Length: 124
Figure 1 (cartoon, rainbow, N blue to C red):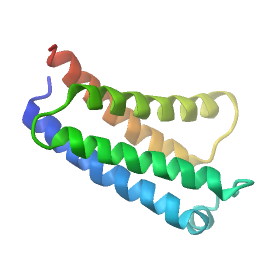
Figure 2 (figure 1 turned 180 degrees about the horizontal axis):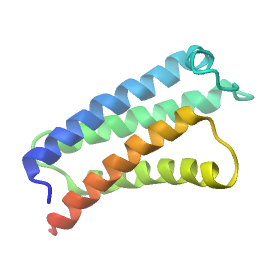
Figure 3 (figure 1 turned 90 degrees about the vertical axis):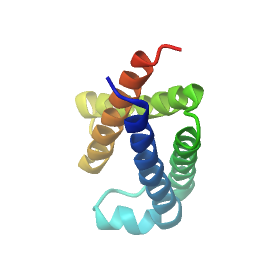
């Protein structure tokens, strides 16, 4: 069971985490890939686009945390977190993927579990 107060704290943390992560990959993708020694994509636009999506996810979580929590935004945040985690875990199991993405997927899976717990508790 996750209280509304705890959920707002998690959403604010998710907001800061995703805004920072999205902005970092959108603006400094080549440097980050070099830092973690990951093969760069064939076009940086892919990384910039996904960084933008993660940034928007952070804004959504901040919006959901401000004032009254908006259930629809929490559902959308949950869906986006699950999509990323599922894609990474699938590739980890059946293909190959750099370890750095697995760490991000673990964090997103934890966020998704908390969001799902709150949504299940707050049957509105």
